[in-house]
Amino acid sequence: MRYIFPILALMATLAQAKAHEPNLDAQIRNYILENPEVILEALEVLSAREQRMALREKLSSHRQIFEDPPILGIGQVDAPVRVVEFFDYRCAPCKAMHPPLEKLVAANPDVRIEMRQLPILSPGSERGARFALGVQALLGNAAYATAHQALWTLRGPLNEASFRRLAEAEGWDYAAIAVAMESDAVSERIGYNRDFAVDMAILGTPAFVTPESVTFGTAEIEDLKALWLSQ
Image 1 (cartoon, rainbow, N blue to C red):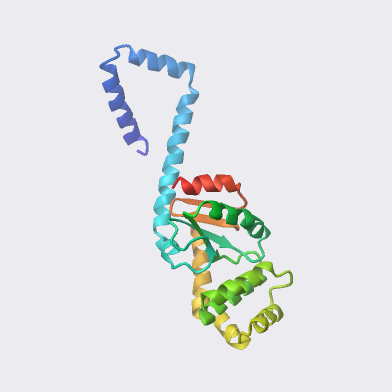
Image 2 (cartoon, rainbow, N blue to C red):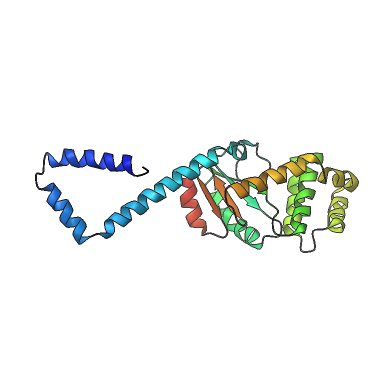
């Protein structure tokens, strides 16, 4: 059934063309016999188109990802093209890709890359995400950006000693942050991001999501730019 409507549309087009070209059937038949690979190519194009439509429909059920207010990211908060990046503090490719991503956004101010926590690589990954989100819940977005940058560049372990040092360096109350780290709100945020990743079959970080596309793992910056600006 999946190919009935495209085939009917093609038949209608051919019927119109035949009125002007009586030998069209023979010409088409000869061409297909001489080039049978065009049938497979056409089916591949149709399959890819259907996959894109299915992905777009699936993403539409996760509108919260794109409607959450800007919290942490690169670019203007009101940029019309919004890309959601899922990252892990233990993800080396995430960090390696960010300098070229910053250049991409600087050259294309219509693009905003909004960063979201997806701690999947280690127990330390989750501890780091909880610390950053705990700071955000307790002290706001500016403090969250500070905590994020500190964790992003941290060379040591993501553990209580590191978090305490970071908090003390900023004059924050670590005991209060430690409580916020274990709050239901922080757990729900991390859980939501993980559930989204599972539903969309995201198998690693960095992962870049728009209302029409999902890309994860390392990718060429120019390819990402072409994809995002085409949507």
